Structures are given as structure tokens and as C-alpha cells.
Image 1 (cartoon, protein in one colour):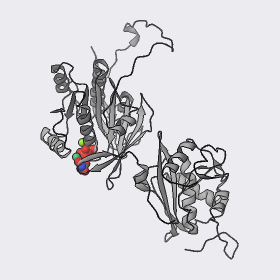
Image 2 (cartoon, rainbow, N blue to C red):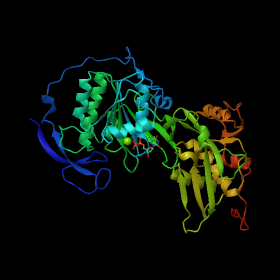
Image 3 (spheres, rainbow, N blue to C red):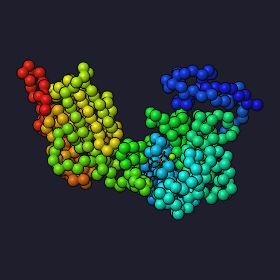
Image 4 (cartoon, protein in one colour):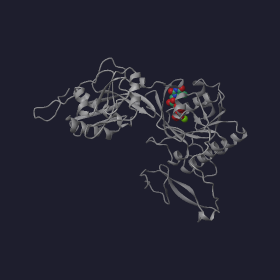
Length: 465
Ligand code: TYD
Ligand code: MG
């Protein structure tokens, strides 16, 4: 018979401890340990008989991957061209960002072709009906149940003898099985319910969509085990002050990850944004110092965004460096390169950098655009209108080539841009725009007429503008 042992499990990282402690030794999180019962394996696993399995070569017949197309193009694309049947997908996001709305709208579309069941552990049936009415989808054939018990969900599915093709669980943290004593949302419960649902998806060819809560750091609540167990992990994010919502795939066993879908929240629900570059870009009639237009690549999709910088003399002993939508360490590096290699002086100045539209950039290709925006803000010399700029900046000020060179140029061309500042070694696509292929940051800033002015002492300083 199995022995039962009490352990304390960190809800943030999944590490286990024999005693309760205030701070997890493994991940450093405070107050995350919860008492759980651990199953203990028999003394020797070897004593349990196994069977020898047939060896398979890499090359062989493939199982056809069947995909359901919802018609919500942004969602289908982020999933890699439709949701794979028999797969389990996790949608994470902050409370109130629109996860339930997105999935209800998705089911409304899917229910035209496939029977769908929406299981809510967070809202009552009436509340969901109200939302459906607001979204004007109340006449669609989506079936609802409100429960937090896994057994009820499995029984409901069994009663309908495999009629359902799509199942939504909103949310996995509210679902629990009575086989375990621990409360809903604990590591053990999340693991048990997810594995039961995974088995269901695989054996019945069902699509299971799970909603997952995120912690205050923006990570999916519960240990990484949840992300490991599912086939696809999507994050729904955005600034609550703005209507735009970004759907991003961070893991996908059936497609590319880092794919991006863009939606806009209206009072009648989420609408797809097929051409997002237009919303991330500020339409300008005349050049403004401190701004640079960058073509970013999100997954396979190019997005044109504006980077804005503000530089002013500081009132603090240590100047402020503040950034929204980019990496602060990368900003420090670019400032250091501008100071050391290009003789700009940021020492007594506060620097603010922002990526417009609430987007977060992770690419090194944004370096050159950031450097140009900073130099432009400091010198008060604007970049010419209709110009895009991209390239990675090295520590010596050299400009390195970046991926998807041609795709970036094509997107800029499509949106009516005329000039591009870009790395030297690739010339492909340059015929689309008037291209300035540059080798170094110094060369780029000289071409743009952004040069530090010299003070009386000979050191490079700039007059306040
Ligand atoms: P919801 O889907 O409940 O968020 P989540 O499930 O991620 O917690 O979305 C709730 C928010 O969306 C709420 O603040 C109101 C807003 N909303 C709209 O702006 N328009 C709508 O049509 C709907 C249904 C919600
Ligand atoms: Mg919800």
C-alpha cells in the first residue's frame, strides 16, 4: 500500500520541503509554501515489471494533424494555423484582461461547426449569459455549465457520449478533484486536474482550452509544471488603460512560438486588428526630435512601432533612467556606447524611453532605433519623415545585421515609408526603399546630422535645448 507523507510545496516553483519556512530556498519567494500530501513511491521502482517496447526509426509514416479553424483569424494564426484536435492549450493573463471574453467569442465561432462546452468555475451561468448578450452571441449553440468539480465535468462529458469537440475550463485554478485533500489552485490539484484533462484530450480527440491565472509578476500561477503539461501556452496581455490586447504564443508543440495576434476591446467585445502596424504608429505630418520608427518582428509578423525618447537635465544626484516597453539594461548599454564611442554626454541628464502602443520589444534589432531616438532627443535634430531604422549595436558602435531584413523593409514599404537606415552587409530588399546601409553608429548619426557640440573645455557637452 502507498504511504502518505505531508510536505510543504512552494506554489511559485514547485520545490518541496519537509517543514514550513517563510521564504522558499529554491526560488526566494515569500509565503508561498502550502501543505500537501505527497505520494511516496514503493522502495524500488525496479520491482515493478515493465515491458520491452518496439524501437522506432525517425523516418516513418506521420499521424495527420487535424486542426479546427475557428474563423478568429488572429487566434488561429497564433495557434499555428488552427487549434490541433486532441491538444490542450493554456491561456494565461491578468485578471480583467479579457480571457473569458476571448474564449466565449471563440466558442461562439467554433460552435457553428463543432459542439462546444464552456465550464466556468468563476462565474455563474447567468453572468455568462449576460456577457453573451452583450457580445451578441447569445443565439449560438455553446453549452454552459458552472462547476468547480472535475468529476462533474467528466460525468457531463460522459453523459453526452463524446458529443463535444471543444472544452473550455475557466479557470484551471478553480477546478479541483475530490481525490485530493488540498484546496483548489494548489500545485497538487492543478497537476491532477490538468493531467486528467490532458488524457481526456488525447483519448477523445477533444480540444481543451484552459484559462490560467497569472501572479503579480506576470507568470502563470502555479509551478512551471502546468506549462510543461500542456501543448500550447498563450498569454493575453495589454495595458488596461488602452484598448489593445496582444495574444502571444510562448510555447507551441504544433507551430512557431512568439507569434502575435492583436485584438481591440470594444464595448461589444474583442475585435481583431488585421493591420496592427497602423495602430502602433503615430501618424505625423512633420518630423519631431526624439522619435524613431522601428520595424519589429513578432514571431513571423512585422510590426512598425515608434520609439520615443526624452532627455532633460536632472534634478537628482543620480540621473533617472526610465523605460517602458524595452529592457533597462539594454538602454544603459546604448547610453554607454553613445557616450564612449560617439562622445555624447548623458551624465547629468534624465533619460526616458518609451515604445508606443503598449508593445514590449525584445529584439536587439531595436538598438539602432533607440540610439537614434536618444541622440535625436539630445541634439534636438529630428530624423527625416518617412524613415525607418533598425540594426543591432555592438559595444564598439558597429552595426550588426539582423534577421528578417527583407520582411522589415517590405512592411515599411507597404506603409508608405521611403527611407531606411539599416545594417550594411545585406542589400536585399533595398530597392523597395531608399536605403542607407551603415557600418557604425558614428556613421549613422553623422549622416543624420546628429553630432555632439563641443564645450569650452574641449570635453563633449551639449547646450540645453
Ligand atoms: P474578462 O473576459 O472577464 O477578463 P478575464 O477573464 O481575463 O478576467 O474581461 C473583463 C473586462 O473586459 C472587463 O473589465 C470589461 C471588459 N469588457 C469590455 O470592455 N467589453 C466587453 O464587451 C466585455 C464582455 C468585457
Ligand atoms: Mg475570467
